[in-house]
Image (cartoon, rainbow, N blue to C red):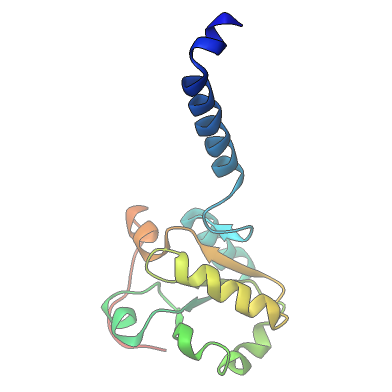
Length: 139
């Protein structure tokens, strides 16, 4: 008890940093619907998941997941009708790092899409995992 009284600032700092670490461990960066590149590959191969790239056209052409569709984030709500036939199919949303696609997941969930997933780490995470990217034309 004497130690705590003499070092109250250090104890509070330790408790605060421990609490922050604990909170971050429970909060997944991709949200509740985040998937790793490996999990995304399994969804694509086993459940015929559709990949939607929400980056701009220039970013998309520079490198994207094979068979992905490009629907820029700014056009997502107005082009949601293009995805209507995939409402009950798993969707994997992708951007450069996973932050824009996390917001896109929330938009599609509000529109009634049931199986929306965010690729954790985005294209950068996909590339880090050593998985292939396709360059060129857009779908």
